[in-house]
Image (cartoon, rainbow, N blue to C red):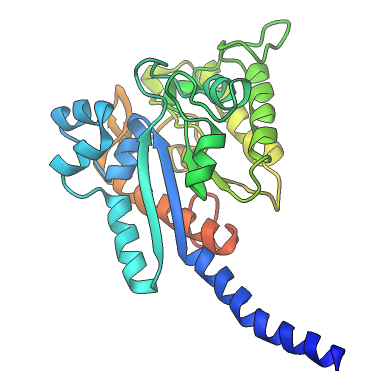
Length: 288
């Protein structure tokens, strides 16, 4: 009799646990942290000067006075067609003030690792704060991340000097920190490239070496960290942002056509990471 009661209890509980799991994956909060290049991709093209100025102060207000951004538009359509409730929001991170307009490996390490905790650091949310509200966290670097200088004699994790050795220390520490939140999925852009006129060949080669290291050595299988390879899309195997993808030969921001294409690809990657752990798309977001 006791055995029958246990079996009956399991049969009753199983449908409810199954429904709960299904509900969890259909109902997601996603945060997209960015600055300028990320904003262009979010929007799917160039914003007016006025809207860009407003965006630095309030992304929500900028969205109200501009056309619908491409990534939220894609999400709205996907939710409707697939009976999902994925909510994606953007956030300028870090803000221009008080922290400063810097989002390089050192800055993520400084805000999220060195100053981790339940309270913001210089008004910027820590991972402890973000992961309470969002199940997916997307973040990136601005293109000056590729201005990588020669290594010094000793690497220093607490230095904002842009070198391969420092970047690797900061990334390894950051990875360990992300592992503290196994229920959160993190999507990281590989760094944005620069047009040839804006970067030296040595810097560009070091940048390529670093992004290859991130993909081939730093990233690990079967964890909660996923990559989106913006660098490969921008360079197509070269060292520089291709001229046909740039805002101008002297401007390393992506142009409207590339931004629109990239928005679709990062969107594909986001959905695949949520639903398939990234197994059905390449790192660029293209279907396998």
